[in-house]
Length: 361
Length: 132
Image (cartoon, rainbow over all chains, first blue to last red; front, side, top):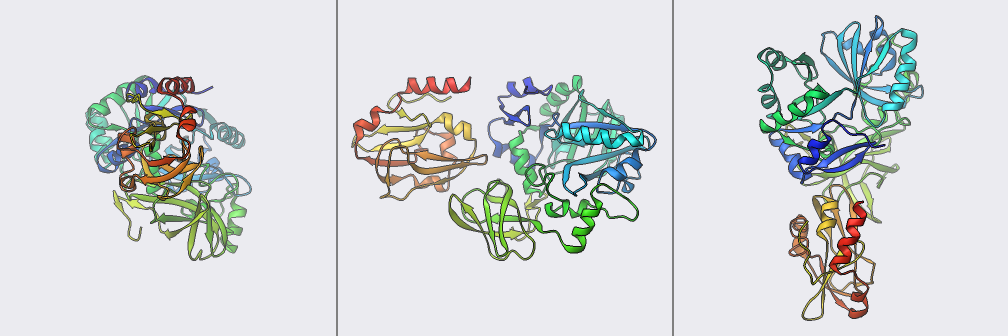
């Protein structure tokens, strides 16, 4: 059965085109995906991300549990409210999901995991948590609105009570605070500054409407996808999955091989670090007209690879993509588009940073 | 949805065809099709002089979301392409039945091919049944 967020009727009233997204009836756009993309890059936009799964972990041994559960080190989290992006791996080093861990207290951490992977994530986390006596509680009664763009924080801050505003103004990037019944995190999936606000369902429509009145443009999942790919951010299921290690998905920066921490999948990652992973993820730009898409064949000097996430970049006006290709210098690259080999270039990503194309892209 | 001009006929796959006074056939995609695709970012046009069969791909329209073949509603020779779409593919989003035309075909069996297409009412009926 298709699930609906508490904002479903609000989206429909705004004229959204709705699509099935991992079992959820979600807005893909409210008219023009490209205009929504530009609104976020240039001003402020908002996304209903209530389909994402909030999971609270409580117990005396939560930190110890998370040391084992995730590949990044939760010991980097020292101040209440700090957040950490990480992968949760299986014993083969494959990515079960990518997630954000928030440290609230020694007895309370919060996870935000993907919607499409909800069932397997909860099953895995619950099973792993048991020996540590950690309770795992999903919070489906919480909605989530991401407010993103250069003017997003200013527009959102104006809606908070003076106390909450004072707290939210002060939080640094990748940290969170609580106030007005909200959980306000300075995180996002667009490459822009802003907040992801976890809000009780009964307050969500009111918050959405107030944000809109403050000049924040509703934006759909279509714009969210082009924004995150320009920002060089992975999408689970497209850029990595259970058969891909973080090293093969451009996520080495999220792996901490700190001494004495036996996290799940570590042995495989150590072997890959020592011997090199067989595959790598690279960024690709196409200067010819056309659009790079998931599944297209990439021809390299070392054999074939494939396009993972691929799209038309509204900021650059041309196609960009991630590709997984064999390890080593890929040499001259081309992509098979409907039987025609089109030359492409490997580039460093993010493709766009602070609203501007990166050098060489 | 935009009003569908009465002189158009349609394929089930959402292409429209209009017979011009000189007997050539202008081809595009319907307003419904452009709204399904979303913002168009690229149109791959055939070459003038290409021969097309009924139901054969004669162009490709790409939106941010998907690439879609445009099928020829009539057989014949491509005698004109809408070159302005190369720089402004969004013209199809803005005016699918007018400035967003894609090719003009000089048909080889005009009457037979046109008779096999849907009139506007039948086409609307089809897209309404798809929505349910």
